Length: 397
Ligand SMILES: C[S@@+](CC[C@H](N)C(=O)[O-])C[C@H]1O[C@@H](n2cnc3c(N)ncnc32)[C@H](O)[C@@H]1O
Image (tube, rainbow, N blue to C red; front, side, top):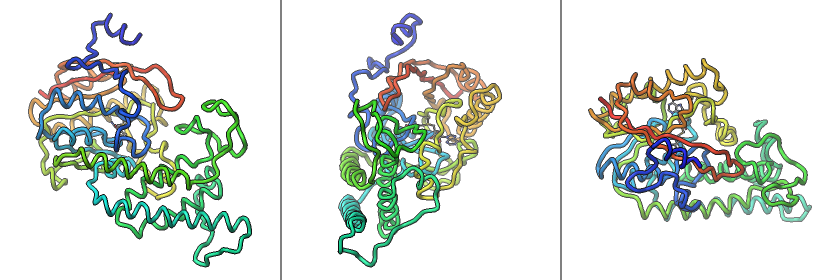
């Protein structure tokens, strides 16, 4: 239907013969290797990035993503031999991107992932045996506590104990970030939520409930251990897979506000002159990029920078929210212009239902070369809403 509309309006829906709907691309391909190292609501389908980078850039080019999110652009650029840098305001999103893009000593990573896993399993066994009043008790183990109201509300006692134990062990290892990502993913899954609403749960579920996903009654989650297991092996497999595909091209993850960031402060990219941008900015009032990972912020105590997010969901879609959004996006591109080569190519993937971007282009001195359109097939969880996005192709004048 969306494609028919696009055809009627004579809109570009293909790049070099590839249909931008990517309808035939299976779930496992959309989430291949490190692209599913940790959930992140609002990320690119990697094939979209790949198609554009392939068509408009070449090996050795420098690609910038000022709204890096979980780092999809950086990973795809690297696989094509292009250098890249990404800027992102949220500390936790930077952790995801850093973990996905890092080059690991795989033997060490494997040893550490297994070591902390087995230690946590012992602790978990102790918890269960303690509960059953069995005689085995290790004096070094104790019940763990947190002041976080969120974690106490959203996790069962057993899950919380396992998570806190694992967390307290992390500092003993070299691959701290990788272990944090495993634990964060396990914490997300271990919350007292229904099986069908992982992204936006409303209340903790402590009783048996009717599960829309499985069409039967399901029990609330009472442990984190099974998720720690599952994501330990999964993470290992994914980083190994990407390690086989990656090139020597540079990748830089930068935590900062894209309105003000200066590349003169970034050692490897001093004064950075990028060949282009491939990015998807936040949309006005749609997704909260901090709150979706609240469990991780609570667990690791990261600084909350949501007041610096452009177009946050909490501001809604009022006229003043849209004006503030427009101003923020213009500030980002004007700032980034300082680090782009003349005639740099800028690709912006956006659901521009308010038609804001032509004005943004004008203010940033960009020529609109082309606008592509694609329906977005939402395949995550229960979110089947029809949605489409544009890909603006601008050229810096
Ligand atoms: C649509 S998401 C990008 C997703 C990304 N393409 C991916 O595949 O993961 C937009 C991102 O912009 C970030 N952001 C919002 N305001 C920002 C700012 N002022 N500076 C840098 N990043 C910002 C949000 O935190 C969010 O992660």
